[in-house]
Image 1: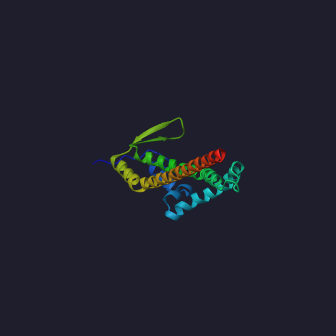
Image 2 (image 1 turned 60 degrees about the vertical axis):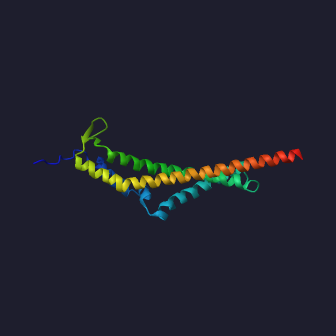
Image 3 (image 1 turned 90 degrees about the horizontal axis):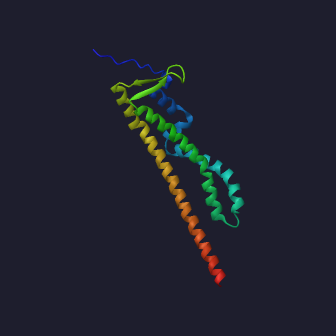
Length: 178
């Protein structure tokens, strides 16, 4: 008769407990919300970013004289805050994913100086991998998709910026030739 070994890892350091804590934390919970609720905090952070980036962009590109460059630079600057928030959320979920996927748990009994390692039994490894597959990986995929959309938006903005710069340069050259 074999018994499952008792987990010596303190409760707050067990990967499953860390997952539950992350899932319940208001900041990290955003990644698991429904579509509109997921996008809303990022839109709010983007709006806050506009309040900071628009005055900075207006110094280089006055809105009245160069609205396209002003808009593109303001939008790019405003994206910094949501990108940092997104990165923090992604790193939190990625860390928990790795803790659950590892077949061992590194933990500390009473402080930083006495690290220990516990080998997960096969049933715990299987349970943790199922949690990663069905709960965490979809969240990470959603966050990666959000990064991709932001990256494509930057690329589109760069193309518009470059095209506008080339057209303005050509117009200047034509005016000098006339």
